[in-house]
Figure 1 (cartoon, rainbow, N blue to C red):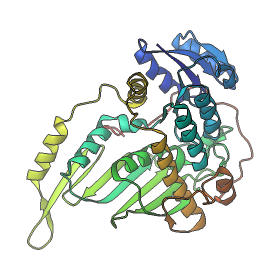
Figure 2: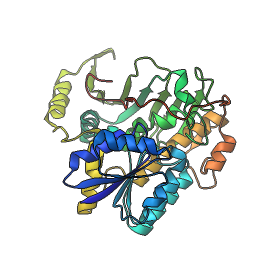
Figure 3: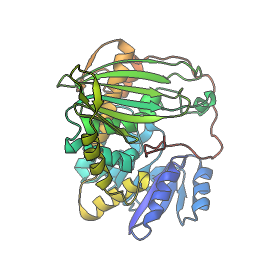
Length: 386
């Protein structure tokens, strides 16, 4: 029975708690830590947990915790993760992995030194639509991928950035590019690989209580000359998200949509119904996941601990995702076309370098300590849902 601790009792912690509770025969939540102990107490009472409550997570470092979920603001992810890795715990980290590439490297170094697992939350990989899309891509039926498109469209009211740690480069680390599109960017890298060049723009068009962007658009060039684009937003009504791949033979996406064309004698398109039927039959033959979202990723981590198998999303994946995000911030802040990979001497490799060189849009002059506890949206790429 693995002993689990939850560090940070904010809104996203419920997804972790509910995930672990699906596997009561494999793990037990024995502690919850939060700088506001009443928030931890509320989680214990809501879920009927027999768990220790502490204000300082360091009080748990010598309690023999097997697995820790870090659900705090991003600026403290690295410190907490490294402390628990050095104490002998495996670590699950909410997105984004850390506030800088250097911190990601420090976390991965601690994991390697201690022989422990790091898994960075990217729950959209563990969705039926996403897993099936990856399988179709890998089948080669769509042909060479010519263009990739991520639309990470969200909407957040002006008061969203009133929360004390949000809306600042120092504590939140960025806007929707980092904190919302991160899942789609992770999926894009998983399916398409790392681009070689990035050119981007960003702005703050609707939230003058935040330093960070609320909208960014990035253009990607891959080593083979093909292109991609990523839009990250918290100003899009409807909150529609999609990832689309245009292949030489067919267009496929999550949410699932399939179109295939062949050329008429004059070059104009007509449907390739034979290929569409073939791809659809392949898609329909793929099995559904036993679990989805956070629950599925937690299952993946528990299995890795129990069997020694690798996790699907490790610290290297988490770092790669942050690298592309930092490349977007660098290009949008400097006007440069950014070459990947970023090197350790790059100004956007460290937190200090990012804070010095990134664009600040507005000054955050006031804040609130907490919002009322209420449900949050985490997005979906299932067919018919966005």
